[in-house]
Length: 121
Image (cartoon, rainbow, N blue to C red; front, side):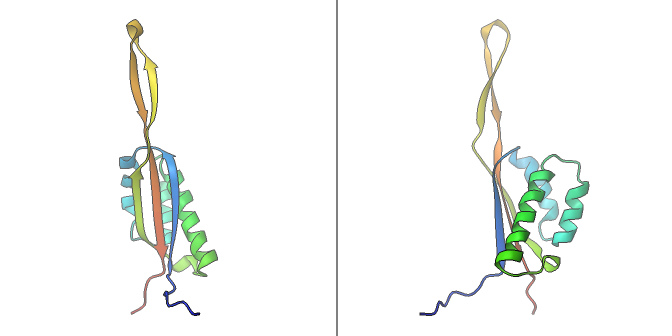
């Protein structure tokens, strides 16, 4: 029995429960979406934001998936999709004056990156 499912050339990777706000991660992802893998690494290297570390890790994982599972060359890969979704918030309490307590929400996010080889027309 042969499968009629076409072989896809899109490799994905996810980073889940990353500490940091979604808006701050999206600010970085907007800069690398649609760029080549090499250009994205250079941009991430020199951006001054804390979220570039986890984003670089997820990007390298997606490229490793493309190289190992699909046999694609990392030099030709392009970031087709880069998204950040909100994760659960960790709830903590900070003591304040006169026995009060203020709630602190420590936000988490899920980072999803997909890379693919450009189609030749």
